[in-house]
Length: 67
Image 1 (cartoon, helix red, strand yellow):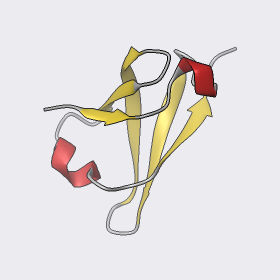
Image 2 (cartoon, helix red, strand yellow):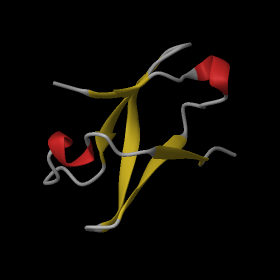
Image 3 (cartoon, rainbow, N blue to C red):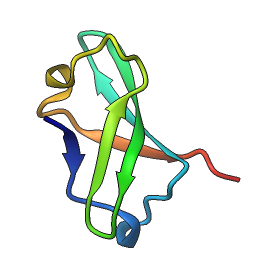
């Protein structure tokens, strides 16, 4: 199982971006890019103890952490 979103490079997501999830239950979650393609980005939680299922259905915002 993986966590992916239907946007990628062609939408402006860069390889150094972080995914931020605004979750009212646990404040927020941070995601790193595991695989970046033109039309799809696969993400994984920075906190390995957080299950992928806890991010299901949530909106992800990207923050470009590159230089």
